[in-house]
Image 1: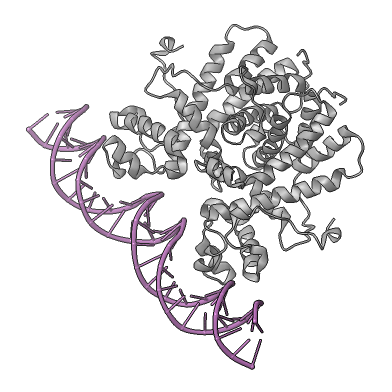
Image 2: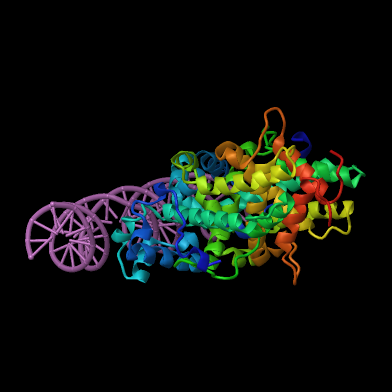
Length: 228
Length: 228
DNA sequence: GCAAAAGTGATAGTAATACTATTATATTTG
DNA sequence: CAAATATAATAGTATTACTATCACTTTTGC
C-alpha cells in the first residue's frame, strides 16, 4: 500500500494550523516528535516545552505552527481520519457487493493498526494508539461548537458519511446509519482501550480479532443480515 | 422514586476522597458547587480556586476533601454509576422476563435524565450532562492502571456486569456481553453529545427517543431477538 | 548578486494552574 | 473545660500555556 502512494499526500483542514507542518523540516520534526511523545506520555503530560527540548528547537518556534497543543491534536486526528478514508476507498475499490464493502469498512476502522507501512514520516501504529486514547478529548470540550464551525471535524464527518452510505446501499430503509457507524468507530476505540486497561468492561478472546468480529456481527445483525 | 429512598444513601469507593464529602456541610457544598460549575464551564476550565470562591471557602479547605479535581470527577462519576445501578435494580425488581429486564436496563442507561427527582442535594440532571461530557476523561489517562488497582472504577464495572448478566439470561451462548453493554453505555453518551454538537455523526428524530430506540434494537438484534 | 522577506533560535516575561505549608480562629467532643 | 478537629486566611512554589523581543540565518524575487 505504501509504494502506490509516493506521490500522494494527506490533506488536513488548514484552520488547525498556523503554518503547514508539511512545508518545512521543523514542521515535520514537530509532527514526528509529538507523535512519539503523545504515545509515550499521553496528551495530559505533553507540553510544547518538552517537545521543543526533544526535537532541539524552542517553544516559540513550535507556536509558529500550532496555536496550542489542542490544535496539534486536532491536526493529528484529522490526518488520521483522512488516512482512514484513503484506506477505505482503496479497500473497497472495484468491490461490487455492498455487504462486502461494509465488512471491509468495518474491518478497516475497528482493527488495530499493527504495521507501520508508512509512505510518509508519520508512524501510523503510534498515531492509531494516540487516536484511541486521546481523540475524544479533541471534541469533548466547551469550544466544540465554535471549532466545528471552523470545519476542524470535517475529515471525521466525511469518513462517517462514506461508511453510512455503504450501510444505506445494503439497506436503504435503515433509519440510523450515522448513529450505527459512529457507534462502531468510537466503540472500537473504547474496546481496544478497555482490553488493555479495564478488561472487565470487554470480552477479548485470544487468537481472534474480537473487536472486529463483534462490530461486524453487530452491524450486520442491525441491518438484518444474520448469517453467522 | 425519591420518597422511597429518604433513608438510603449512595456509597462511593473511599479511595477517591480524603474526607467523605457527605460528612459535613462544607463537603456537601463542594459537591453541589462542583456539579453546578462542571455543568456550566466543563472540566477543563474548572478549578478549585473558582469553586472555593463560588462556595465561599478556600482552596486549602477543598484539598482536605479531594486531592485533585480529577479525584473529584471520579467521585461524581462513581456516584452516578451507583445511582444508575440503584435505578436499574429498582426498575427490574419483580420483572420475571429476561428480555423485558434487558429492555428496561437499556432504557435506563441510554435515556437522558430529565427530572431532578433527587432524594439528596445532588442534581441528577446536571450530573448526567457532566457524565456524558466528561466521564471518558476520568479513565482515559496514563494513570488508569494504578487507579484501577485502587478500585476507583468498581462502580462502573459492577453496573456493566449486572446488565451483562441480564444479556446472558436472554442468551447464555452470547460471546460478548460486556463488550455489548459497554458499547451501549458509552455509545449512548457519545450520541447524546453528537446530537447536540456534531449532528452529522448521528440520527436523532424529533418526537422519538432515538438513542434509546437505536440501542434497544441494536442489542436485541445482536442477541437474536428481531421483533421490530 | 543583492536586498527584502521569511524562518528560526535564544531569552525573557506574564498570568494562571495545581498544588503545599503555616498559622490563627472557631467548633465540636470526651 | 481541655483537647482535638475543622475551617479560613494567607503565602509560597513549580509548572503550564502562552506572548514578546531581538538577533541571526536562509530563502526568494528581481
